[in-house]
Image (cartoon, rainbow, N blue to C red; front, side, top):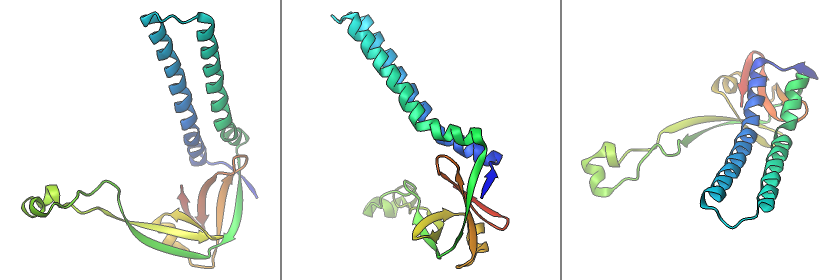
Length: 175
C-alpha cells in the first residue's frame, strides 16, 4: 500500500543524499588543488592534458553524484512510500559496549588512578526485531509494545526501496 511521505521521512531521505554531496565536493576540491599545484610550481605540463584531466574529473564527479542520489531525489519528488505488513518472528535485547568509551586497564596505574587508567566501557541496551530472518534495530518503546507473532508495518521508500521506519499501532522506530 502506498502512503505519502512525512516530514521526518523526507529528512531521512535527504540525509541519505549527503554522502553524494561530500564526495562530489571533495573531488572538485581535489581538482582545484591539483590545478593550483600545477600553476604555482610551473611544472612542464601541457595545458591540453590539464584540461582533459579537469573535464574528466568534473564529469565523473557529477555522474557519481547523480548515480548515488537519483533514486532518493525521485522518492522525495514523488512523495510516496510503500508499506508492508509482516509478522514479527522473534525479538532480542542485547547489552553491548560503546566503542571508545573505556580505557585499557593498566595493572599498576589502574589501581593508583582508577578513573584515568581503569575506566570500564559504557554499556548500552540494544533492541532487535527478527523479521524474515533479518535483524532490525528498534527503539525500546516499540520493543516493549510489540509481542512475538504480532503484525507490524515496515515503511520503504518507493524508488530506492530504503527502509524508513518500523511501526506498530502508535509506536514508531525510525532508523
